[in-house]
Length: 464
Image 1 (tube, helix red, strand yellow):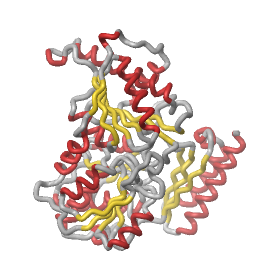
Image 2 (cartoon, rainbow, N blue to C red):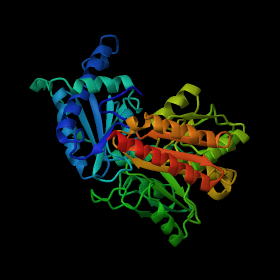
Image 3 (tube, rainbow, N blue to C red):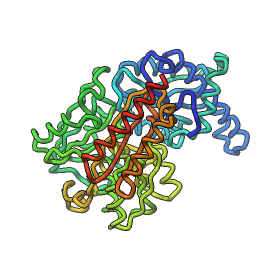
Image 4 (cartoon, helix red, strand yellow):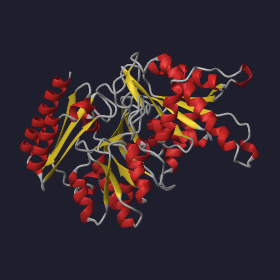
């Protein structure tokens, strides 16, 4: 992705009240997005012969997670978009993939999600979807960034947009989720614990799984605006594991704050990740002859997944970290299944983007068809020990460019050659350098990860 001033790998994200995650900037962002979309619509209307498209306003759908700051940014986006002449459809708290679905379902020009995903409530962010329910391409993001710097111009009063609320958004999305599994699929007799991270899935996830017949217990389903992802959710599944054991449930399912990630806890409390889900689903779809193209993972996917897929004659492709890059590789190679270790799982035979609820249903349907427990289905996946160390630094990219860091990286790569992997990268959403190492010897992994992390810290201190 080309350098951006505001957009990172997953939209715009930062600390609430600190530019650009401030009400004044988000107001300008809303106007800029509306203006760019209007220009593109005007250009397309000059070439279309469909009279129904002539003169139609730009329409933008807005959803959010449960952070208290979402109220402020929803209002700012709404004002900016209306000032540009765009109509706005407000969904309220909804998962990120639900916004993608409803953007397409409502025939809108774009969708906007107000969320910082798995981050704490002090952070927030803005993500965009195209009218097709996919992440915006780089060119459109660059055009919006350029427009932010332009003069804030409000259209004439008679051309202002209007805002309305979609009252049945939860029901619409729940019905879509259920439609991604076969009509005769049922969860009757299954006991599930759902961890909604006090986030955007707190209403819709229990509804979906209960309507499919499961006995559902919930944790993390009482948002107060400040507790999103706090001690719960896919990034902190310990509470879910404990609840699964306490209830004697068949499985636990944890979503993150905006509902596009999912992790599963087995009946014995074992916490799994996206690699486990990819392996189990790929294995079953391969047996059914329903797995075109390769499985796509990322630089962070465990080497054990790659090795297990190869044993089943399933090609594996690594993308850069970020579900948008997984999607790009799936499209390029004609695949339908991909994802990240963190729990972003894309099933393109069902939807256009990563969706925690849809991915969980795909896994449960796979287990039902195979007649296996989750533990049985993933038994063939043997992971290499992996350690990830997050080094918090300002100027992460500058630190990685230092000769001392490059030398330390080369030394670790030489030590692991032919028997392990190292990934050193700057986070696209936080001021972090992520050091990830895999090898069969867990003690060596820990030692080398610490060695490389120390080199990054020293380089950052020298740069400061």
